Image 1 (spheres, rainbow, N blue to C red):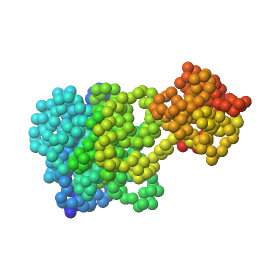
Image 2: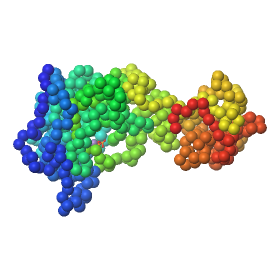
Image 3: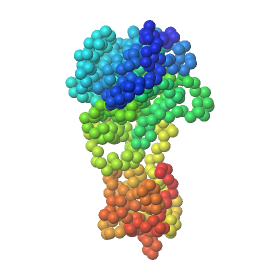
Image 4: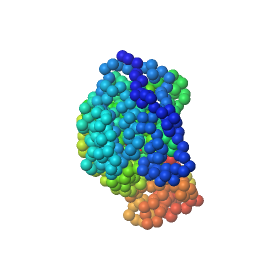
Length: 521
Ligand code: UDP
Ligand code: MN
């Protein structure tokens, strides 16, 4: 083994006074404000400053103490770096490439594959090819049609020759010693997927900023990616050090190293995912549930320009593309938990989203004998709140203190008895009030109520309960049917202990209901 190499070819004589040197912030001169402003949209960051900063600038070594002493094996696998881009800013792309080649041990880099995802900018064609002639390891793939990030990465992966694939965005700066610790993880076990700590290159002043330690990639419903710091008490209790590997429920997506054969064994990304978005969820669930691990390696650090909007066009609507991708992921990987996804993105239920054909993905999951999503939640991400229903148990009328009960196929109100199975209901994420396979539904006679065989994702059986806090706070405890010509509320008829639908009245206690247990708002 050897100590991690501190390769920084870019430490060679360079102008210490150049703008942005050492990752310092740069200010736009007063007389250039207009120009800087007008060029912002070329990349949705300060393109003017990027052009001012040397393509091989130095940045501060932000690794935690101890990283530079860490040891890695002499026989690390080689890697193909795959960097996809569409209409990337020239100086930013160059800085990305220079940082990879300048701060990696050359023998570990099999090649750097630039995948031009059918950019429209002229400078990304012959001019780029010509510039890169000075780097024999750089290969450029000009895609003839726009593939989108997901399929562009696959195009790169297909021609890659290295043992490991390392994916990077095209607006990054790799820090000193970034590569070996990633490859060390993959070498240790080929099912480990290693991510660097993603640091921040400011979109405004282009400064290179470090980030808080102990961050994990997580998601919240409906599958929104985010970062969460490991709680201080957990860090203390487990004596976690700044240099310790962090297991991650999901990866951010853009920057990671994965064994090439393992990537193909996993079936790569679902090729049915479009353009951008959700692919990080897909690969994360796939890796964890099918025998692998996702790790953040604190001694590997790469800066990335975070920006507020994608500077390129989406072939179809951006929001729709991401929603459809996420729905594909939910359908294939989430099992019974997919209701949480749809419940938190209820507008998708209404949309009749076409997610395309899933047969191959479902077959792949079977073939790989992947574990269940429940296993994932219990073992990888136990912190996520994921109750399978919103509420359950008895359904009590507030005025009568009596409970709804199912008698054969009809409904009645009787004395509450928590041991009585006929009185148990679930209020589901899809807004059904469900007893076994039967759902509470308006009957054919106006105002009457009955039971109907439940149907998952239709709105025809949906009820609102404790969901109107914002729009109609008076109806919080009510159970409201929105779908009828006139919204109507579930009401207990005190005379014959029956249920009926009536015009909603916030003051009427016969329209107020309570479930035995609530698990979510
Ligand atoms: N990209 C691409 N084709 C696309 C969309 C994105 O090649 O259709 C590239 C993009 O240039 C970038 C990477 O994929 O290098 C990730 O995209 P982006 O940086 O916009 O994602 P973010 O970092 O904002 O999540
Ligand atoms: Mn990016």
